[in-house]
Length: 254
Image (cartoon, rainbow, N blue to C red; front, side):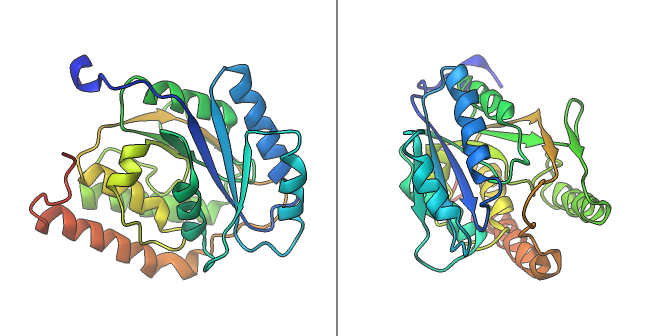
């Protein structure tokens, strides 16, 4: 992509949206490490943590932490719960002109958020991380989930004819106009992780891929239930595939 095509207005504020449900064991350390990394790199930011109906002390811990981290913006998803709904709640309430979506369980590397910001400032509309390209990696990835992940992402690569090989990973970065241009967002659960990037690609937004690292959570329980998500992922795939080939460009970036 040419320098002229990538020339865009400078970004002023990065919003980081983290959905959290029953994450009392790690949400504070996630926010503190993220805030420190961004502050050390002089990145203007806000950290939007959306409590998605936690039954533990997640919400009270976030309220307390806000006193020492003024950039923290805790929200409660008071509507229907779900991973995707919590993220949409955060996107609806963010102030930034760019956003990174990441997990609240410390599985994503805060240093990669800095690299996302740097790539967005080169002019890209979207920056997608991949754990499965040179320079990326995973630590303690459960074998069965890894197998399912690779099969699902290979299917998406072939179905949409794209180079991205880690579409299902939530940890990605976007300019605000991409989020606005992908609305309405309809995926209420983990299938939102593929709805946003696939819509962005199909609708003509520019994107690049960088290597990222991931490690398995050290506290709490994983919220993704693979057996519950298959049909939901497929629905979103078919919905966007139909847009790609039948909408005649009605939703393309202008």
